[in-house]
Image 1 (cartoon, rainbow, N blue to C red):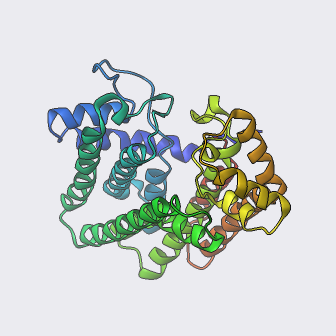
Image 2 (image 1 turned 90 degrees about the vertical axis):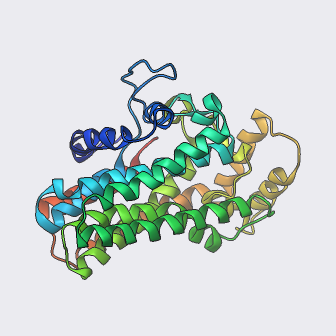
Length: 338
């Protein structure tokens, strides 16, 4: 059964999107047009569209963390805009590096305008994220910038590790988890703490929220990796078995190859060949991942990370309604189908 998007995500979109659009409007004409297309606001020719952007989980986390600190989500809006800009900077660059032609059921920016434009517009978004925080001009916004800068460095470190893994025949689960913690967990951890920083929350509260977000980030990546093998193309917008076709060292694949099972060894052989995989080979490889325990382990590990995330919330004083929304957001991340 498909789990519904938590209502807090829709509320955060309503609060954050006007500020996000205002930030994008500050870019030069070309960057503004390309970024607006990427966010789903316009078609490539500039016509307005109702396609809409991604799930906007990071802005929702930023606003909830502001509520933890002050009770007012609005305090977290600059942080919500900043983390969404950094996330989309990374998506523009990821699409170039992965050669992905589709995102959210539309052509990617580099596929329409070329790699140079995609890289430069991504860079513009990254710079804009820090401008948005700097504009607040407070001591708290300086702390938020430091948090965002550290998370961005970790994200890039994770991306570099992910690229390096492509040149290796195998990667341990420990290495893969460390990469995912940097590439995905760091920005979600920042998102879950940046609103609290802007709201002047005590360091212990900020640290707990950041740990919550980091654990949710690992759960997110585990589910993302499962969808990269077994996701429904009509829902995810990516071909079935896309990670296997690309021979990615994702978490369930790394677990399966390192499982010391017959299926794991067969999988290593299939993915070690140079020729493109046929549809039948992709389907067979997915079966080998499951037979070697990769699918079951990844699902269980995502649940374990969710439990750990919720447990850390109990270590600090948080309004029960906000805590419930944080838990609901975590459950959605683990049980989502796209």
